[in-house]
Length: 355
Image (cartoon, rainbow, N blue to C red; front, side, top):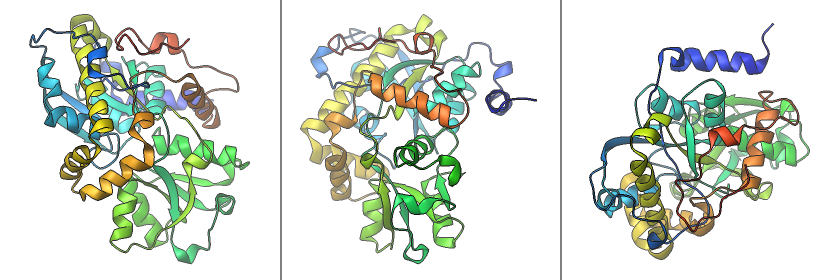
């Protein structure tokens, strides 16, 4: 009889078609410590490095997207020799990984748990940077009729996250555990996206759903009657939400493109920190949201702490804990970070962590 871990591997292989892959190029993402633009060595000297698509989880609505929006609008990719032809949207979790391993998208920012599961299943993935590093924008909401007021009230209730392997699945599991609740006591279900989970909540198909800034603030302005059950930041101070990934073939054939991708994102992060109003206006245009809502979202997470281009050991440890909660790793089992992660593409002033 197959274990859950073996079933997960088989299912992922079937869904993504990895058995027929060979050497497909994959995606790239962010990390801690926000270096200045000048701190990352110029990898290209202005030489053309090629034209690429990228994929970003929950593009364009959630906070993972602004660094790429800024890099596109301010010309940071182009200055470093990269042409970004398109940003492929994704509802999160394994769907973002599949954009890379089966869609031929060379760069992307994906949920860390999904990246690890894909790697364990045989996907040709390399993590080259860390992405979102805290969970200050994530919380779970309900509607007044449920009578749910706090996280302890979720026992026996239907609670949604976005997609299997997503950031919201991992954060939900970890917050429940930190609150002294066995995740198995909660009926946790994938809704397919943030909006889908909220629709289920309003229709009575769930009693709580994941919600994220800046969409939550925009919903409140429209008069939505959501009530906060708990904020993820109450229970988690750090979590390696997302990572930048790309394929080993891309690293071998075009390593300067990988460096340029990370450097362009690092420059965009610095721009958000120093020019939050303009960054919010750019974000609002892409996400079709008021600029003041986007600015409030930046203030809520603090871009200097939320975004980065280096790894946080504590955040990676929580990824392992989540995999154990899911039954995909046995108690005490560790991710093979040494095989999965490359730190040599990070800017020189970004500290490396022991893997």
